[in-house]
Length: 118
Length: 112
Image 1 (tube, rainbow over the protein chains, first blue to last red):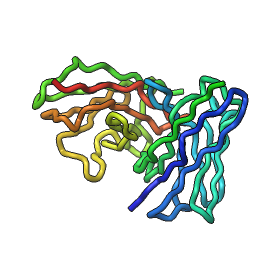
Image 2 (image 1 turned 180 degrees about the vertical axis):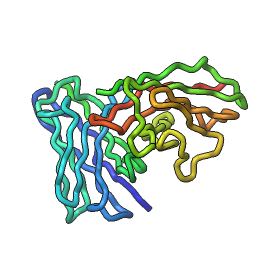
Image 3 (image 1 turned 30 degrees about the vertical axis):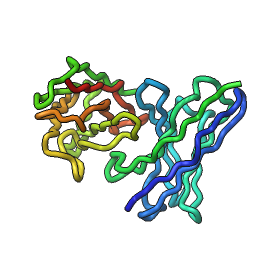
């Protein structure tokens, strides 16, 4: 069965960066886009972007240009979200989600909580 | 960006009653292929969102037939017939017609 396994919660300082991971199993990792979605406490969902692990192509929400970088490691079937220059506005839960065909998120990871605090 | 606006529910909803959640998009989500690029998700407390409906009206695999989606190009409704305890949570609509993909602000369903 399809599973997206998250990395652990992160407590990081303002101005630093963090890299969170999403390990996929149960399907061909290189055949599906992996998306990342942000959810601030008590707030709704915000789409960050996607990566296609098959060729490394990416697409970002312009709001996250310069903030988020998506990468993927085919050998370990793991997708990564790197967030830089962290501020309190980056404190949120970050989900990875597989895009089924044609454009819905059919499987979601459990979500990684990132807390930015000094 | 396409703005998605969701309506509120008159919470709490009595168990067994029906509930309708509305979602409006700032632009028609009707694709040239005839399909409407609108999804619905439910996020139960403490959980990740799960897909309910895609292409405005197609139920995802394993989703109860108590859930149905309808609408036009810009106005959409998710109807839940006979609300049950497992339906409690926040419902989100989402468009995938244009980048950046956007979600509605969410509609909370509470049970009476």
